[in-house]
Image 1 (cartoon, one colour):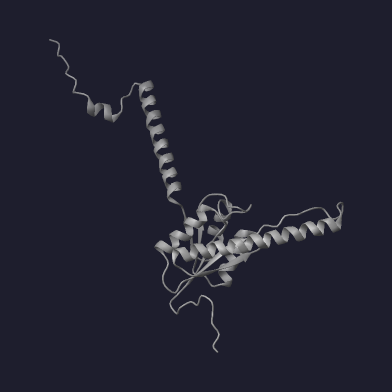
Image 2 (tube, rainbow, N blue to C red):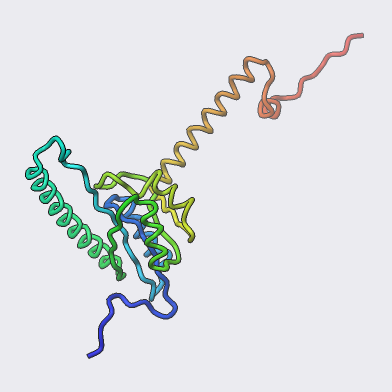
Length: 208
């Protein structure tokens, strides 16, 4: 019986790494990719990271208690990781695509880039802002690192709410600049070009 490969990539397909951290921004990045860029035969790899913390200092603490606590934490991490994989698989199913998940370890920026090299990915997709359920997120400095150090193109996806916020901020800044310029014109006594255009021509009386 021939072996069945999971999520095979077609001859013309490419591999895409999508950074997932459980945030709405990462979810939107996945949806944006599927809606705008995905092609039949492409293979999606959703990369995520599990967080490990130091429980206690074995030199000063009780080693047996530390081991027990660490074992409990590792179990919790594995359960959360498994739940995360299920949730990502469900999201991809709802979007009508197939893919796999990969857990990365170490510093998240270099880990994503190394994964892209290992999988011979064509490009990386990351969300723009927001905090994930884990301490490390694929945003801010992590996105900056990936963008500056990646050997392949990086698509940084900003969701609609963030774009609207940027537009509102830009509009408010422009309004402030215009208001400040108007105040300067008032103080200096020099009218703006607009005031010249809106004023009737001045008639000068000749003296004889």
